[in-house]
Length: 359
Image (cartoon, rainbow, N blue to C red; front, side, top):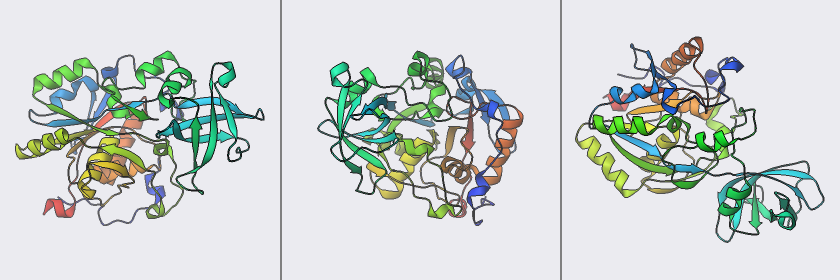
């Protein structure tokens, strides 16, 4: 089987669609596994509930999760002059240093001090601007904090909810915008396909004979970065840190050897596994950009939420399951009033082979 879209030239507008605003989920479902699951099998599209997932997989399949943990990366404060600012800490470096996005009316000067969460004199903490990141023209800011960053974020930070969620973060968000198996702190956005898993589903998967493994990719704010070029090949992808542990590499090899399928939970897991396969590098930074025509080497099936129009993630799922099929699934989901984006519902996709994979 050859993807009908493999030879087509795509532009940004090809990945656009009209979404009624009321379908953008503002809160999670009452139960994690009570959300809806669109089984996107070609020719047999079925509306299901997420807790049906174990019955849709086979004994010997391997589910791969992203075990990153969302940090309270959004912090409010002010410049020494009194001007209000907001930081979104993207990455923690050594020596109490961080890299962050900054919202402020006028950027502080090099060496300028910021008082965060009230400042050190009011029970908060201070930061000093060291420069731009990753170079002098970078969009991010390199800051020196007055204490250990993770401890400061845990005490003073806010859950970095996506821009389309319109309420301030609450105690519910602290619990539900985090997977039940989150382990490695570092993400500023949740691997949202994994938010549907609870202990009941994990137990049912184990009883079914489905094995599990983990990778880590610290999801950055760039996941919400809009594509601004009509020619998608001109888009510059954001960089994110990932790791594929040796135990997971071994589990994948064993799964392939026994004829099982590798099921990625979320697009972040896809980007991690395919970066590892493409660049033969088990950890590091990846800027992989997956668009139609990409040849997948690891992932056979994908559990994913519904993504923003014109986003790089729409391009990724179209590359994975076929452009026409994905657009048809989205039309179905909108007609059936599925809930969209981070707190929304999910779908299960099968990889459409490329020409070389089919031969």
